Amino acid sequence: MMVKHKKLKRRRLLLKVLFMTLGGITMGVGLEFFLIPNSISDGGVVGISIMLSHLLGIPLGALLFTINLPFFYIGYKQIGKTFALSSLYSVAIFSITATLFHHYKEFTADPLLASVFGGILLGIGIGIVIREGGSTDGAEIMAILFSKKSAFSVGEFIMFINFFILGSAGFVFGWDKAMYSLITYFIAFKVIDIVIVGLDESKSAMIISDLPEEIGAAIRDRLGRGVTYLNGTGGYTHEQKKVIYCVVTRLEEAKLQSIVDDIDENAFLAIANVAEVRGGRFKKKDIH
Image 1: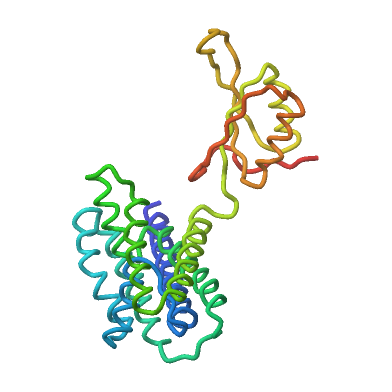
Image 2: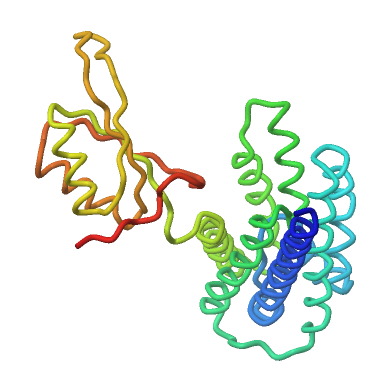
């Protein structure tokens, strides 16, 4: 049993390293084949490194690694060893890839295409690394730490930092390039979300109706999803009611709303995002 556990642990570690390697390479390709040749920047330490490399003539790969080092040391002290080592490895692969591909010809000279595809590749790479428990940007680490000691959220800190960095890109590369950089940033941001959460994003639904059994049966029959009945009490009427709880995918959300409306158009329906679903019987049943 112990041997099997060790094999499983080694396999997970190997997969983690492979995915982080893939993430770092994907980011490097997006940077060197699309963004750098078209003078398009990004947010965070990547954006700072791109501008400093352009102004000082220092190799981009070296700047990416060097500027991130102190942030990862802080991450090691404040967040943990595994996080810091994972982040350090990912950035090392990212930096090496950027150095190796620096003199290759760009895929396109069209700045709009470059900003779109560069943003997609950056987003995929960053998303993979975050899923594996690492980070590719020291600015994110500082945002996490500052948010614990202030009223601002992590997202607000990152937006403020990147607003300043992308604004600076206007002075370095010109304002048209800064606007393309903004497109890259927002595309990368959305793609990161997709990679982390997945296209098959889950939603939890709470349904309060006078016809709970009928709605529950329809969800099982028409969606193939299981439901759980919870006992609830009305805050004003103190009336006892059954509350239906179920988890569906993002693509099934519209179908769920249709089912509820067909049976009870006065039903109360609340839908929320679910970060992760594990265990239970979430796997879809066959619908005959």
